[in-house]
Amino acid sequence: MRMTNKIMQNNSLYNINNNKELVNKLSTMMSTNKKLTRPSDDPVIAVRALRLRSDVAQITQYHEKNSKDAESWLKVTGDALDTTTEVLRKMTELAGRGAEKDLGYDNLEIIVTQLKSLRDEYYGTGNVDYAGRYIFTGFRTNSSLTYTEAAQEEYRICEKVSLSDIDTLNYTSIGDLKGISKENYDPKLPAPTNQPEENDVQNADIYRIMLSYDDLKAAGPNMSVQYVSDPSKLQNGLLPPDPNSGLTDLVPAGDIIYMSSTDSNPNPYEAIQDPANAGKAILVKETGELLIGNGLYTKIKGMGITEDTQIRITYDKDSWKEGDMRPEHYFECTKTDPAGGKINYNWTKNPAGTTPAEYISFDGERQDIEYDVGYNQRIRVNTVANEVFSTHMDRVIDDLDQALAKLKEIDTAKTNLDLMKKEISEGEAGYDNIVKACEAADKAYTYIRENMQKKFEHLISQVQGFQGDANVAVTDNGTRADRLSLIQNRLTTQKTTFKTLQSENEDIDVTEVMVQLTSMDNSYNSALMATSKIMKNTLMNYI
Image 1 (tube, one colour):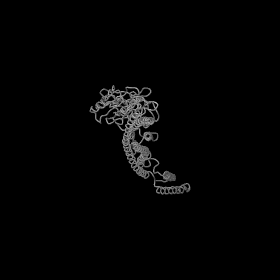
Image 2 (image 1 turned 90 degrees about the vertical axis):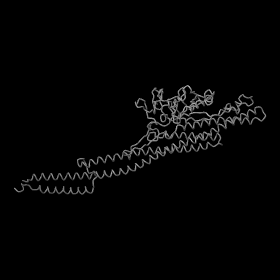
Image 3 (image 1 turned 30 degrees about the horizontal axis):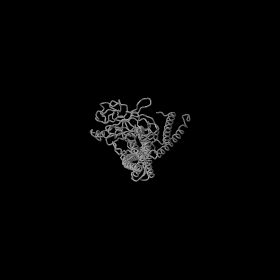
Image 4 (image 1 turned 90 degrees about the horizontal axis):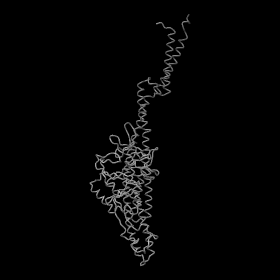
């Protein structure tokens, strides 16, 4: 083949360009520190790079975001639970002091005031939030556990209890001793005009169910007391009850009497002891107590109902004060909005899905908030309110406060009578009457003070029960936090491993590429020098 100068020129330019491209490629690799600038450079490395980058991105999401968020949630929960257990510990100590027999009203008042303050802190802790989300309210993270201010909202509440929730209330009737003072009592008047005696002081145990709320809706009749007689026929929803719903009246609607604790003639605690009301129940709307007559209690016990039988008490409440627990976090309930519509909370959906339900009830599915913190690994971060905060704490303290008010009433009467007794000498007119009144006051004080002591002893066992629930929640939260810590350690190791693999796959060996770049640069310069010599002479130089 005849080799011309033109051919030599073209070949030289082609070789120079190839050298230039290689120098450019190696220079780009040195600048970016990466093996590839486009997938076509090496399809195998490119595919592997995509997979490794995806793995690193996932692990980074788990490690830097999800697990950190979960860790923060668990830590906030843990701090709140620690506060709760400390509050309950202090309440136990105070209840133990209150159970001492020799304490007078003044000391008991201080203890009850401290208990009420701790009660408020107990429920206030339930309103702790993390990043604007309430941590104890299940899926309703935008809703506080308690009312933060007074509100007027009407709820129809279905509270589920059992036979063990029927307790006894010790009630002492003090008769004419109530409000007695020098201004309204004259011992010189002949008996029985306003002359208290020991026989007037009556003490009795009353059966009752303490509901979770007080200050119930005034309008009645609005309560039903039923038990689940046939679970297989039980229907979803609250109202109206279907005749075949599997519910049977435990207390017929006509046997429920609606009264207020301020009714003086008679008051509900004395009315329930009336033989005429033995087969009935009295709802004390102000205190949220359902008093049960002796005859009705005997009837209930004879119905064959066991401790496992669910009793459903349905009632209305439309007035809420600051600190009241929101019922949607605890009960099946229906809220009536101002426009007349209804919102149903915690109703379990039936198979047809026709029952409107905002959330599944605690008895159905748990309201667990979970985070993805690894490949096919999820961890629960929330603790639900009913695992820690009992609605009965508020009621136990209220009950104690009512007993203290009763003690103050008789303590004041006793003090007034003792002062009046000192002003009358033995043998004077009215002396025998004042002595009998003082004896009656002493008897009533003894009954009420003993009842106060029993309530403090009961409070100790109640708070210890709440403390046990809180300790379980602390342990559960701590266990999940420990598990998350192990997962985070593993994610750290995985992240390091995958980043190393990614670097090995994508990053260049700087030394090797530098040697190649120097070599190609020398080759490029040599090609330029060779071409310059070849291009000096042409055929014209020899003609």
